[in-house]
Image (tube, rainbow, N blue to C red; front, side, top):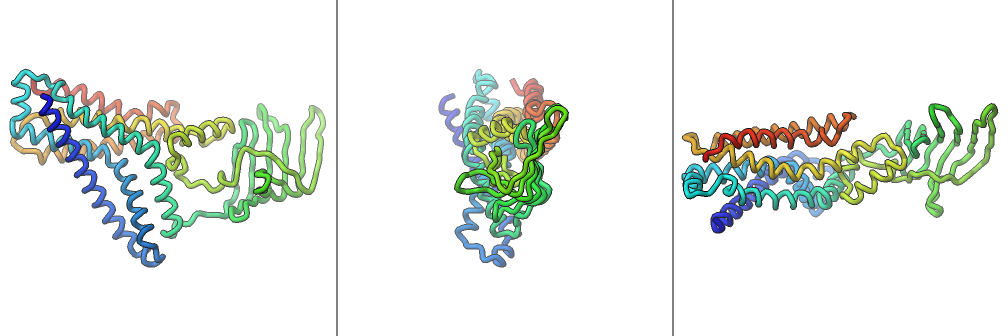
Amino acid sequence: MKLLDKLIIKDFLKTYLFVVLMLILIVLVLDFTEKNDAYIRNNVPTPEILKYMFNYGLYLNNLLTPITVFISVIFITSKMAGRTEIIAILSSGVSFLRMLVPFMFSAFLISIVSFFLNGWILPVATAGVSEFKVKHLDDKRDFNQQNIHIKVAPETYAYLSRYYTSGNTGYNFTLEHIENGELLSKLSADRIVWDTTKMAWNVRNWRLRELRDMHEEWSTGDAMDTVLSITPDDFDLPKNHHETLTLPKLTDQIRVLEERGADNISFYKIEKYVRYMSPFAAIILTFIGVIVSSKKTRGGSGFKIALGFLLAFVYIILFLLTRTFAEAGTSYPVFSVWIPNLIFATMGLVLYKTVPR
């Protein structure tokens, strides 16, 4: 079986790479056609367009992995079944599980590559795509933000009516310390400015109100440095910031948000769960793909490939739905994220009873 293992692994990986490249090229051509007018209108340099397409291609590779793996498995297996090779292998005394070894080994290699792409390379590519859109495709961010609420510590909340990223300046600033639903102190200021030399915030024309048991204490001043667990970068984060962080930086960001007691920490945690979950999709879908296409049928491989597309799209849609539910605040986000893999793994075990013996 060693020679056959090598042939299967070679055909699997070769088909996988071919399918990946073809699908990515098709999407990139369509994307270029759609954005070509914007490229011309904004005089976008060709090297930057090529860099954007490369980064977008990496993003597409991650998105299309379930489809490409499933189609590759079905194509290879149905071709072997059509030539009665699977019947010959099983008739020689080789078990179905032993025949699965080269397929699962190939899927494992793809999963390892997918994990490193998700953890370290894809976030950089995603950040590059976002920056390109902001810079060249009229997808400008609103640099003058209004009505900003930030939880800077577990029991401390900051509010700004307006913030201008160009000057790192906020207006109508308040900082409230609340414990057990009771206001203990409130710092108000007409303006708050980031001091680049001290790397700290400076409040201007400030007023501090402190509640002491049965009385209040007031103090005022023209300027005062204050230490907050936020920086100007926290006011200029893209909507998909959690997707642009490498795995180590994502872990650090979760730790910082936990120290603050921030409310948006769930998006970062779910992103981390997804990065550990998604590589297993290649292994599960490979297992199902071999089972589905191992029987020889009169219709050939066309129907099986169509079925592969359908099941892969169902997996992607299910993954997007469960992730949305997890981000909406479900009680068990880890379980929600893993639902697609659990459902398809169960489906694979049920289908395994139908394989030829």
